[in-house]
Length: 216
Image 1: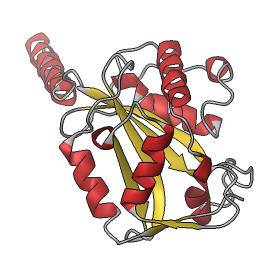
Image 2: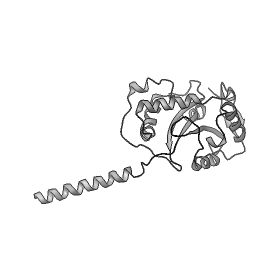
Image 3: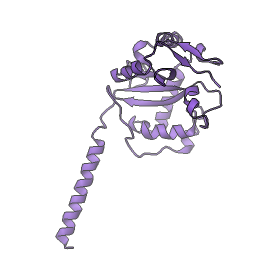
């Protein structure tokens, strides 16, 4: 291969790599707000009883804090790693260390925060949510309507309103899956969830009522 041929090949490879990189980064625009997802652990464990978070008496647990666009969300924005040592400084933040690593890689890397700052924000948002008494020590399944559970949440958290929370259900709307709360980019104030989040909530919890599984 001649020098000119090698040069052309190198430039072509660099150009192709640059194009791929630009394409991969094309949607990494500034996000609009945070969505905190609180998972109802008994529902998760109904189909994954072998998972580490199951059989521990968990109710609401932190699934994650996700940067959101007004429509859609970014994911896996960099390859920056989070250390196991740092994760262990927040032992009660997630129901398992495995989830902490996953959430950082998929969502935390899009937050424009360093790993420690992202975990601190996640802890602060989690602590700001008051778990309603009706969902604590739930020994029997609870059947509620979407409006009833929304009111239960708002009574315990008067700083929230219907626009700042969303519910998701599973199995064609038969069981509560998650409670989601939306915050502005500072994390200091609740804000309205995006229309796509509200639409998904309406569709997933479309039945007249649903069950909140009991805690085990």
